[in-house]
Amino acid sequence: MTAARPHLEPGPDHPITVEPATEHVTVRAGSEVVAESDRALELREASYPPVYYVPVDDVRPGVLRPSDEHTYCPYKGEASYYDLVADGGAELAGAVWYYPTPYPAVAPIAGHVAFYPDRVTITTGS
Image (cartoon, one colour):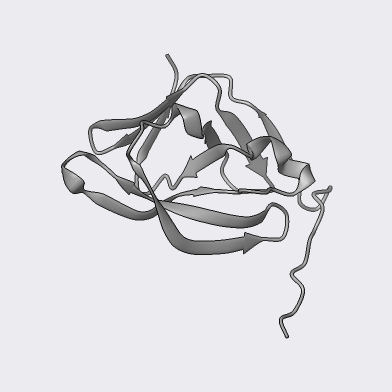
C-alpha cells in the first residue's frame, strides 16, 4: 500500500502566481534555438527564481523525446519529463518538464513545458 501524496494549496507562506510573460522567450541548446514564444507563462513560486512555461506548440518539432522520469510537487502535481535532443544528436536527459494534469491553482501551465536553466540558455526580450 502506498501513502497518499500531499496536495497543498498556495497561500501566504508559499505563494504561487502564473501570469503571461511580458517578453518574448527564446530557449537555446548550445547555439540551436529549440523554442521561441510570445505566449509563455511566468510562474513565480515562493522564493524560487521565476520559471518560464512555453506552450509545447512553440517548441521546435522533433527536439523532445519522452523520458521515464517523474517527480512530484505538492503544489503543482506530478511532473513528467522530456529529454532534449538537439541537432547532431546531442542529448540533454531530463532537461524539460511539464505537468500533464496540474493542480487547479496552476492549471494554466497545462500544455506548456519548462526548461532547466542550467542545461539550456533562456533569454527574454525582442
